[in-house]
Length: 110
Length: 180
Image 1 (cartoon, chains in turn blue, purple):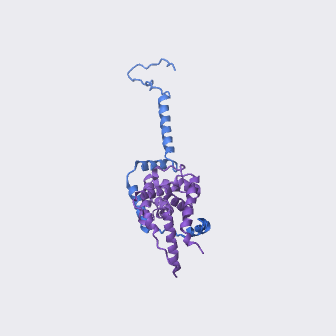
Image 2: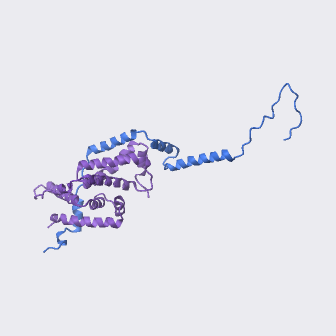
Image 3: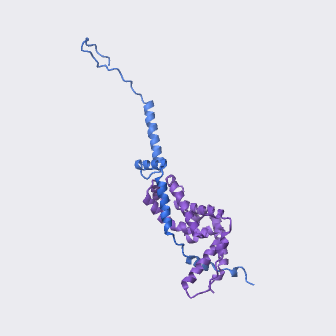
């Protein structure tokens, strides 16, 4: 009576058989169908794609979060400066004078 | 880890058709071979591959390089499309694939070779789907064990077990092709 192992081909022979099995041939129409799908999807308006294009123009080859973080940081910095930095209120124009009045010749306390 | 597809995927995400064509040329033959052997039906294999590419075209803009190797993700998507189709099949198509006539040895070596190839395909089609996927990825796609395990979503040990059981089943089913 044959054992189970005797009913099997050897490992090497299996490898040879598998190596001899040709890859399935590729249908020509499939490439056209796949690219047609791409054209259809690329033609759809996409906010994300537009953002990515913009980000790539600003910061080429960077992931989207990098330009987004840089923009957010710049905005925060700008807002911080605008809020916290002392801005002198526009002082009244002290060089104003009138031709029809007496000139003020008292020394200014600078 | 440098992903050879990362740049192309980024360009596809921006709507670059040339990059899409290059990416398709690079991966389509292997994706189709994977789907063809998983599903055995060429028309269904075409549809599964087309679905996988639609998912790629739709999600390319959201692809984040560095998280996973692109080809691993793509083959996993293809495999999942195949699993979806296999699940939808209520009737056992595997039985049909197994009904390959035993070829009589003829004078035409080409025909004989084709008949042997058909028997190998039939034996592969008889395997449980995960064993078939493991054999397909490791023997026909040239994936290493780690990559194949990632594509299948299993541990390397589980992949090795799938491979071992699949190879054993094939050795038994192809016994009649043994060189005597």
